[in-house]
Amino acid sequence: MIMSRRTAPLLLLLAALLGASVLSGCATRDDDAPPEVGTGFPLEVTPPGGAPLKFDREPQRIVSLSPTATETLFAVGAGRQVVAVDSQSNFPEGAPHSRLSALTPDPAAIGGYAPDLVIVSADAGGKLTTALDKLGAKTLVLSDAKTLDDAFAQFSLLGKVTGHPSEGEDLAKRTRGDIDKIVADTPKPATPLTYYHELDQTFYSLTSATFIGGVYSRFGLVNIADGGDPHAAGGYPQLSAERILKADPKLIFLSDTKCCGQNAQSVGARPGWNTLSAVKSGTVVALDDDVASRWGPRITDLVRAVAAAVTKAGK
Image (cartoon, one colour):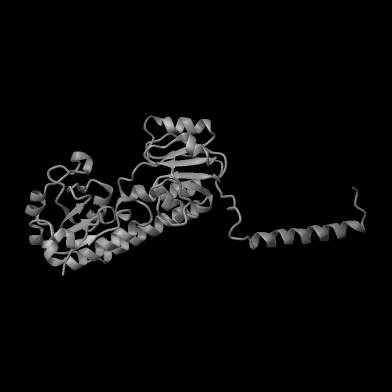
């Protein structure tokens, strides 16, 4: 249609009003509306130890088969894009829990959620990746973090691939800053404190070569499980009651509280354990099993618990 000089201004005014209405609607978008399209797409990322992964657009249907990744996804603002999480992903409470297994992932069951992105912590041989690729889903493998820096890098990566790059970077920066401050503000004893970290009642422990062991090292703590080689047994050796009693750790950290009901009282009731310095001084620390086994945003909770224990033991 050809506009006359009289109709042109009216049409232009109408277009302006409609534009203002659209902008107003965007500004008052309801919280239940679909997430806005992120920035930086298309993009290509290379996970540590993995092959380059290309994304043409922001993923809108994410399945997480990693409890740590689940926590991080919600922390960077990608929760609305998550359509299912595995049976062990118990945080946050609002996550869409399912019966999907992270240990034995079933491509057909995963495919039932029509995902465009699936996040796992391992994929031996790449079989799951191949199967999901045939279903049109990309697979992002995020291996266990070995250090705090590895964890921070995963925060940033998950923010980037989900269309929340600034949120991912901010989470990494804030978590790093919080941990650095907590460590710096914690008094350091003149003599380094020894500790024992318990994974279960058969005395499996971890060494300073592991991710959690690295957290303890930030406080200058000495791990009785290290022995002559902290890398032995993959960093997860089984100790004996005799070895623990002989080492007499000044701190005992329990990460078998939820699974196995362990606490300061049950530890003190073990044969001979009432003689341990940690038991006598009240520095047996009951940790949250999940927080003490993941490298997600709640790692600061673990750091605070360690800081409190070090402060108490150093008095």
